[in-house]
Every structure is written in structure tokens, then in C-alpha cells.
Image (cartoon, rainbow, N blue to C red):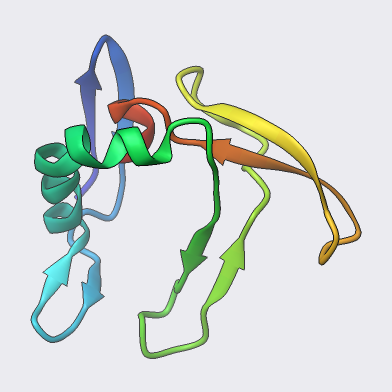
Length: 106
């Protein structure tokens, strides 16, 4: 189940909305997105101008996970990045900045 929605004039592509993120209680990706819509106005002030990383668990939360620091090559126009040197990675990293609701939902 995929969907394209508009947030503040931006097209946001939502994919795999029925993917189970947490098995107990059952939380699917759509549930998390709905939560971000409701809580975004409270979350966004704390994320402003802060680079973010993403915990990726492609096979589910109970399987192997990894941290994604580097922004994907193809970013929507409403997602900004911040470049900084990562001592751990040993090179510059383009981090994602989440400074608007469209970026948070994306």
C-alpha cells in the first residue's frame, strides 16, 4: 500500500504503509506517520537545525539493525542537509535536517 500526499505544498511519497514496525503492540508504518502528523508541531522545534540519523531495521525491530547517517543521494526538495566531519566514519557526512512537517513525514 503506497500513497502520495501533499504537505504544505510538497509531494511526499509514502511507501510500505502496512509494514509492521513493532510487533507488540502491533504498530505499522501508517500508525507512526499518523502520530507524526499529530505530534509534529511539538517535535519539530526540538529537531530544528539538528542533523539526524535513522535506525534502519529492514527485517523488523528484532532482527539486525543499522544506523544510517548519510542522506540518500536523491532527496526531495523540501529536505535539507548539513555536512560535517564524522570521526567515526572518517570522512564528511551529509546529514538530513528535519525542519518541516513534510521532512518529518518523509
